[in-house]
Amino acid sequence: MFDAPEELKVDFIASQEAARSWKVATPEKVDFVSKIFLASGISTTRTAIPACLQPTQTQEPKTDLHSAQAEAKMVYGQVISEVLRKTGLAATDIDILITNTSIYCPTPSIASMVINMFSMREDVQAYHLGGMGCAFGVVGLNMVRDMLKAHPGKTCLFVSSEIITGAFYPGHRKEALVTNALFRMGGTASILTNNPAWRSRSKYQLQHCLRVHTGASDRAYNALNWEPDEEGINGMVITKTLPSEAANVLEKGVRRMTPRIMTWGQYAEAAVNYIQQAAAQVSNGKLCAAPAPYQPDYTRCADHFLLHAGGYAILRGIQKGLRLPAQAMMPSFASLRDFGNTSSASTWYTWSYIESTDGVRKGQTVLQIGVGGGMKSGVAYWRALRDVRDIHPCWAHLGGKALTEADLPRPISNTYKSIFDLPSTRTAAEQQQVIQATNAAPRVTLADAQQAAAAAEVIKLHAEAARSEGAAAVAAH
Image 1: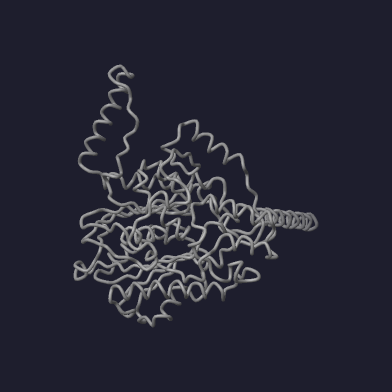
Image 2: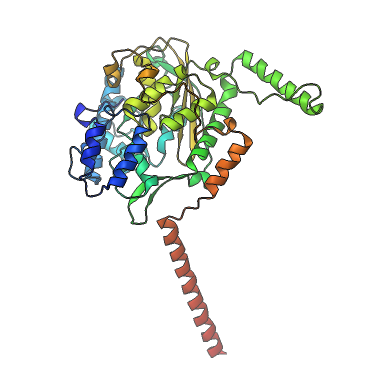
């Protein structure tokens, strides 16, 4: 896990005041971002931002390619060096390299940058994926699994991050300013292999993983976009449809994974529920009342939960949808508090928190859930092959002691109603209200306007050509 140096960790109060001197800042923008940040569940002193974006360290924000590359080299250099040190591997031992960032996608690629930094072999199979969003840290495991099936016995280095320098938004559009408040520096690197010789050294075994993509739906596809505003300034736009679409794709992923991880007792409970539903339907409710659709107690399916720490509302919505107690949610909220939204790396920060505090015992299971733009979700299910208690450098400040709810910026055990609630936890009326509200807010972007103008110009040219051809035909006749 990337552990930022102290000089990059943000003091929110000092940064808020210093930001008011930026030319790109206005009091309204600073106040809006501050309001979002203070409601996000993120620490006011621990999360990291590159120096080129910190109001206390730069006169104006810098989002150029050189600044973004400097951030990328810092993050990738640290996390890869750490995982190689822990595993005892050399960079030349890596057979497959998979890297990921969403917005910053340079040429040569980040995968090529890593090969250059660590002098990897010429035959390493290297792939960089861009635009995959927050879900890739889990969705990408499907690619790793398939690559290792095709190349048995090989070793894969899997690196997830988000380089936030290039994603900073200096404009005025509120839907894009939200990301400035939530996203922070972060990155993670893992070694995965199906080489039997590694089993005694491995921590976990991947038992199941799947992905769901609802991008065929226009609502889902357009819920989260990297696009220009009316002034041509690029930003990550969070639309009003995002909460419902994220909840929808996440629920589909969890629903598909559930039968694979239920206990035998839960299978029996599900069977009884099905019989009761059938009896109620056949007898029109005379034999028995129709029970609510069966949902298992997920704390009996898994021992630990790694949920995408996208923000307070997102985590509370997932908590409500999966009916998880506050204790099961603490690792994800701890990750959110100390590191903010680290995009595709967030679930791995949560995992390192568990290893650094309570630890994972042999035979225990871990449920990892990611969700991101597109929309897509990934769900992975792991089993510990041995006892794991490993204090990661990024969590060393806790001294091995787990956080309590009192340590969090906002409570997580109270009743909470979130726009990110999963559809299954809403009443039919609430679900309809969500759909109506999002559909009632049409959004015309600069890209839409440019496409419409271009289409109108093409039609005009075709019309003029048709008139010219018609005049020529008449003259010839």
